[in-house]
Image (spheres, rainbow, N blue to C red):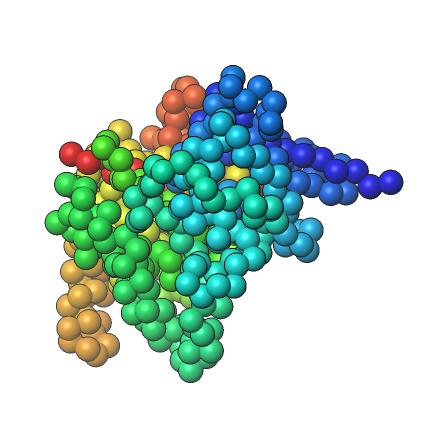
Length: 411
């Protein structure tokens, strides 16, 4: 006999946030799929019962996480995951938002060219959708999916041989797409309006990383309210560890040099496999700070230092939350990064192999590593003193892939 287990996505009187997703929802899903032959999602906890006593909410930036998890489960079960929908007074507002944010188009099996291509990861009854309340979310508040399977990108990519050539091609493609998807939202935030081109460049780089290295779909959503702009990007690909395994050594970067150094400090008494994920996050940010193009590290610096916002980075079982509580180290890292990037730009302008700056660049690289070690020590010390208010979080359930969240205040 085969058993079916249901897990409710939205709980009554609980806002489905990224924190809820990581801390309780993932755990509940993991516990149920271990022992059941079939697994399905129940959209809301009470279904069609207690309609007038029920209230359901979802924070928009948790939508890419939900899609990413659904895609993982659909691959595991080799078929779309069943999603039981309910249409009543308690669910109509959240159904309305998800429908008009394109969640159901992206998650379902849509093939109509005028709507987002369905990724066929959730199966649901389409008759429950439509004829909602008249409240329309902002058109830009839509979840986006990026994939090499779209717009014949994979075959176009095959025309390029080198990794750098492929990356440059994808970035050039995504710059236009990202600008179309997010430019208006960036314009409407005081902290990002004057740096729209910079953020478009960074987001194009991150999406390129997602689809090129993760070998999977990359889901993203940007949401603006009167307080802040929030952005979430999620993939369930190969993750940071495997991506770093492919990095070649050069005169600036020796693979896992920082990771090995902070592991030797032995500050945190945490399960070694889970702790490894945190160290890989630090290694990734360190690697990004040495690159000759703007990317993940630069997004973190811009969000936290220049906009007084929050930057969250999750990989497997670990998450780091970067805020202006780390200003001293971040300011130093930012100055060092800019100094190193200026050398990269001088070499690029010369358009030839130029070793005149090697010694100076190596000196800056060593300073960057030392600063990362100090940052790691301070973060770990705060965790040991009171983990509840720490900037790092560890979870028992592994969530495959890379997940980035930023929050930028409007003023």
